[in-house]
Image (tube, rainbow, N blue to C red; front, top):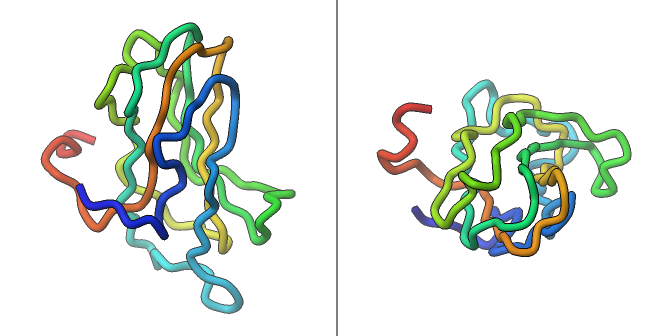
Length: 135
């Protein structure tokens, strides 16, 4: 999987409580806001450090027309994932970001409890390997 720094939301970001990604990705501004034009954009969010101490984590991908995300809209989200499943290499079940981009996109990690360990790398990718064939 090739990741581009310009398309990363989180780069081994430590997640101990509910937080948003360290980076916001600008897909387009002005009249041309929708880059997908109905074609889903390949996405990956993967655990790079096993989670411990919390109960669960939910991944949310949000969009907004400003970088402050004052009126953020959810593009896609997972259900709650039990921490026992969030081991190194776990991929959140969001393979694509659907149409609906408002210009800026970020990820949000909703943590139930307080984690003592856990990190995620998330971003857009050019394509998926075979591990996403069933999603």
